Image (tube, rainbow, N blue to C red):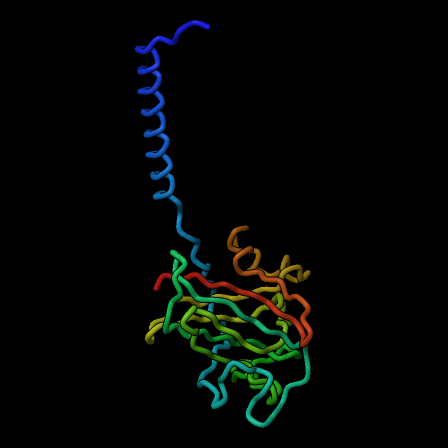
Length: 211
């Protein structure tokens, strides 16, 4: 076996060290350039945000005072509120509102025809981890719109986001003008799956905002 050339070995070592340093530098640069998470897209508030918030506006939309709503498909809708870096937005308040199983809102603009047992609106403060949860029904279609519920996020009196949540796989999505106007990534962010659980359905909707 031929003896190795010390000078050649030193040159190889310098080249390897230089390449390793460059690779590490590129890796750190790539890490620094990793894009932040996409903000949840906004959508129109719609015409039926409550004129006045109901006396009962907690996280259980299936109980309005002493009344209990037994129509529709009961569902848990839950998620988190975080910023683009993944940090929980502590102090945020999440609101939802939607029509009842017959497609009516608690709103004078809709004839105030919603079932009195259905709360129709709820709000809840997130916990220390940014988590929130509502008990409601799977959204239903009405007036040419695909099934959806409205979602609003507030922080210290400021409105951070107003958007709409859609049902994954619902046939009416393709004919809904607002759903169709969304880009593919935005549709993916706002269209969630309602999966069966022992006490109804469950949907997860993570929300990303800029506080």
